Image 1 (cartoon, rainbow, N blue to C red):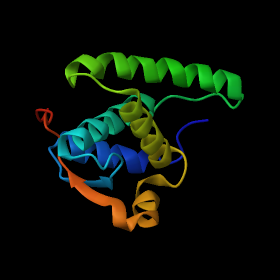
Image 2 (image 1 turned 45 degrees about the vertical axis):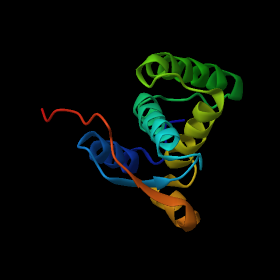
Image 3 (image 1 turned 90 degrees about the vertical axis):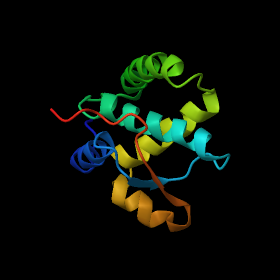
Image 4 (image 1 turned 30 degrees about the vertical axis):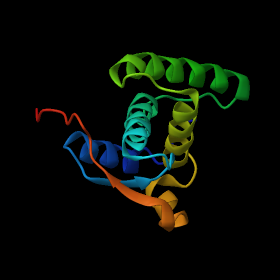
Length: 127
C-alpha cells in the first residue's frame, strides 16, 4: 500500500525544504525546541516513507515500517542532539496521519486548536 496522500505531503515537504513556514499539528506541548525536533522528524519520516510501497500483509508492512523508522531515527538522533522514544513516536504518528489516514489538510482541519507554524532550521539550498 502506497501512501494515499503522497502528493499533498510532497508539497508540504517542498515548502519545508524552502524554509517554510508550514502549518502543522503540535505534538509535544513541551516548548519550542522539543516541538522543533518532533516536526523535523515528521518531515524526514514522510520523506523516507513517501515512495515506499508498504505491503498489504500486516506482518510484512510492519517489518518494512521498522526498517524505514530505524533508518530515519539513526540519521536524526545525532543530527538533532538526541531524540527520545516519545518524540519519535509522536513524529511517526503525525506523519502516518498526513500520509495514510486523513491527509495533511484533513489533519489540520480535525485539530484546529493544535495548529502551529514551524520553519525548517536547516532549509535546503535551491537546486
